[in-house]
Length: 373
Image 1 (tube, rainbow, N blue to C red):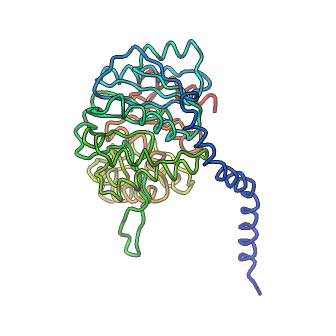
Image 2: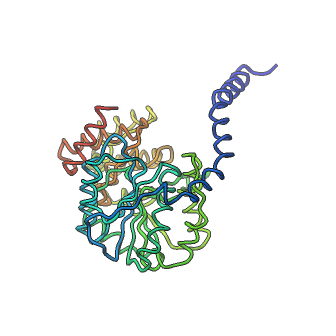
Image 3: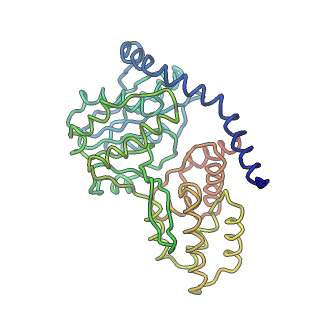
């Protein structure tokens, strides 16, 4: 006789497949339409894309900033452009949604070029259109930034110095990865990629045919899921396959290495502003905070808890307040899923407690986003 749990498992599996059937049909239809959509996009590129001059100066360092703000231009976007200019970059802003005349005028005052295009291909589609344009405009760029507005980012001199000082061809802010353990509890890293909301390209790679080969061959798609696969994951795989040196300023393994050097007060700070999807891990955190002490056993238990959490959870959700503090980078995702929302609440709480400092514009926009959500 078949055990009841096996029957229940199969019923749940079939139910999930039926539930996902409409999405699968839509995905299949979009897949069949993408070649036609790409041909139409490039055949009428001069009609689909408008490029206007802004008032910011042209330099030998360019920053592509892709935005999608149909509800109106965010103040943090203007401040980000100002910070880029102050650090010697010419903002090349790409908007994947139409801007009002007022917002366009405001933005043009703080960008070098403004490209307006339809939201076909999501961020990587905008990156591709911008880069193929910039290849002719700035063939000898000294450095380039490629980023989008899916995060709040404090672009200060310290961050620029870290990016410029990195020895690799490509530098990301965050490397997402999955951690694995073997039967002896040894840790290994799997499926790691640079998060696509920010890349820093050093001069040598900007001038390297391998950099342009990826963007010339890239096929923009109308599906967000396939954009992540072909774009974000595809770009990292391309770097690995071609032995192109790359790194991120923050990763799970770097975080775990740094945690080993921290005292009990800092570990309490890590736990205080941590967020979880797993209620058992959250309860374990509460118990650790309640019995905090400088003993070796408490340190060992806390580090084991952090390690186990990062096997199950993304770093830029769980311990992200501490990670940004630890590495001196303030980058906060705007994603509306449950874990990023809890992370933003933790950031705001840490800011209000005086444990970290957010810029006024970022703090105000985070607070407004939480009220809307």
